[in-house]
Length: 398
Ligand code: ADP
Ligand code: MG
Image 1 (cartoon, rainbow, N blue to C red):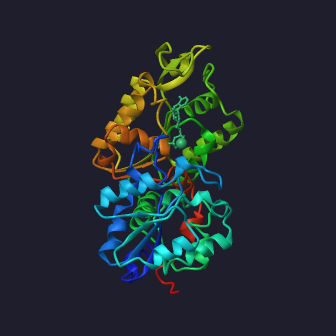
Image 2 (spheres, rainbow, N blue to C red; image 1 turned 60 degrees about the horizontal axis):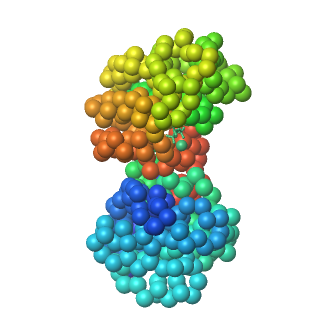
């Protein structure tokens, strides 16, 4: 990787401010429902502790919009982290100010401090230079391990870079390596599996990845717009008419590039997307006028499986159906199981897709499950993420 990482720095005795993404799902009583994002940062945190750094962690949680929200304090996150690293974590009730300065000045090498939710301060999302400077004044080095926040130009993501040397954490490094591996030199055949609700959100990836892939498998709600583009009647499925021309262009481009684009040949359809809705399997040409697409059908699962079994790289972004509802979850579950069994590089991007794979207990059997939904989307679309752009390059010296 051309970006510097925490391994390139001498951190011993230094105050290291680490931006992490501890934006975990938490209920009103402060119970953490899934601690994947905390666990994902443990390699960086333990590396820093083992190398005698003074570790100051900072994160956002939820959307408090610049005000204190008692339900979004990071206390419960700090307690879970403490259990995971098996050492004390001092959780502060502020992110900047004299109290924080004092707490940091009392730290010993190897100590861990967690600042309060950054989004309690309007300066965070506004990338206010005064807020960024206040944060930066706490530390000697900035480590960004929050891949999931790196598409946002916030104070703790980009603002800090004006004041401190900044390098990638180990999770950030892994994310960048896995994502750029897909775009740079993927083992072939290489398939992109695309799904989810909206074409609009995924079209950027499709355009960018098309020249690299051999195959695109399309499922999810977005299949409706693709099918409609081929003249198939999709009943009451939502269609993004304004994207149809673009899809046509992409299909032509795919043909020129020799990439095959496979659409579902059969579908699970229903009158609505609610649990208990009357569902049935129909072939793609036979969608009833009063029904909408809810999942890919068994023939499609079989066809996609056959293709995926020949692949050496698979990127998956977007569920194959409304997997939150059991009767529409077959497509997503089946594709996840197929990927888990492949002897191939399998990279999962997208928040819902990662959630589905994790719920199925298959995350550990994938090469990589990205911790960044929006960030992975933008990365695979070929965009330069602001939080990655500000990381020091290997050759650069501060
Ligand atoms: P990701 O977060 O992995 O990028 P998206 O945000 O694009 O994925 O889409 C996830 C959502 O897409 C899920 O909530 C899922 O229920 C929905 N979805 C999948 N298939 C359909 C469908 N046929 N109709 C409506 N929604 C769908
Ligand atoms: Mg999503």
